[in-house]
Length: 457
Ligand SMILES: *[C@@H]1O[C@H](CO)[C@@H](O)[C@H](O)[C@H]1NC(C)=O
Ligand SMILES: *[C@@H]1O[C@H](CO)[C@@H](O)[C@H](O)[C@H]1NC(C)=O
Ligand SMILES: *[C@@H]1O[C@H](CO)[C@@H](O)[C@H](O)[C@H]1NC(C)=O
Image (cartoon, rainbow, N blue to C red; front, side, top):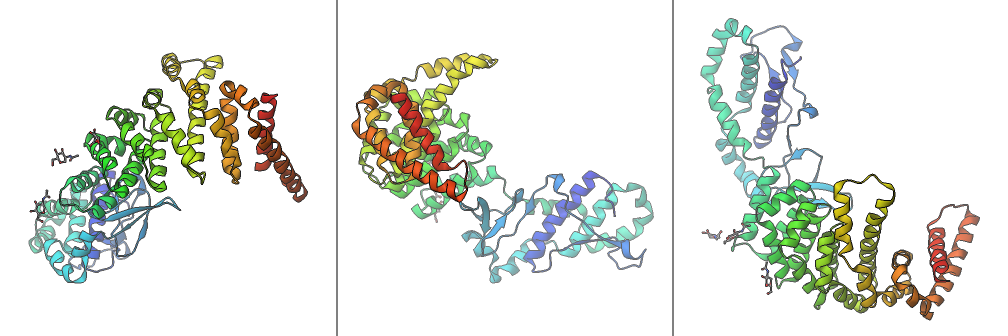
């Protein structure tokens, strides 16, 4: 059966969705068929019944009914209000289960009340779908008038049904509504720390979408996040930094708002004070995301003593996790500035390019790196046993070479490290070649070491 038009298909789909929802409320199978003759009158046989299929291109939301177990959400699927949504960081998938509020509603003893509240029976829905289809096919209406009237008397009017369906629609929240609710809950003096922590996790998931992160700002959420950073509870600090970092990642509008709201200061304060590693990791993540491709924020960072704070952090970090992140961040800052100035050589430039070059010229990163002792700090990362850490250190050393070369040359520890690392990695490349591997990671590291040695000659 072809549905008469796109809008009719839309209407039918809407009903199907609500019916699925309803069907699960009353514990029936959610498969739905359109019944042309609900009174059971015999008609034309098999095609009196036809399945309504969900056309994904319609762009309508598919509503997933959460259960007590986690289930994976596909793109474009929506969940009812109050659902507990989380992100599986391993797979990148969204998962949903019943939130606590819903558990109250959906457990067995509440099902009956729910059934009474949502007073639309599956039969009524089927009838409504038929009715709406008929409205589209108005030419057929006169012949069926008698029948329709008799059926209608058994059920409520179509308008009533539509109104009730609209009420059911409230069960499906948009991201906007979800964020509003989460922020209200977060801001409520009644919320416990545990609740706030889980709200932050949900927000963190939502703000990966550029629009959502901007909405969060316009709802005043940024202020709440900054207060979270100020909290005395380290778990709240950690999660707030996580949300902030995700919100500003690749989101220039939010980057600007965050810097304007003074986000850098509390972040630097956390980095400068005694805090557990996991808090500092998330805060560094937020700082790096905030500074990325944003020279104005970088200037603020430098003028607020950011490099000084980082160097203290670098010296205190024995394990190397923070060291590596710091060095990677410095490398990113140097190379993005470099890229901007190189772009002038061979590209047809837009008007904003000059402004960007100007902005970056105000970031006195290299000079500061030299002054704050980074030329001798970064080589220390080569002492790590992790290949990855060493690689990051080598890249940063190369990027810093223009200002640090003199210091490198007089750094006997660095010279020694480079020699022994080169031997070590060449050996590893040799044994890899025996196994038959090409273009190995280790060969890449040998090349980095070689490039640095050439510069230092
Ligand atoms: C806190 O909870 C009480 C009762 O549970 C309620 O009356 C009050 O409105 C709540 N306050 C806020 C700010 O939500
Ligand atoms: C949080 O609550 C305070 C008052 O309790 C209010 O002034 C503020 O606007 C609220 N913030 C958000 C983001 O809802
Ligand atoms: C965080 O704390 C600092 C210092 O106590 C204060 O100046 C600032 O206004 C606070 N920020 C927020 C968002 O509460």
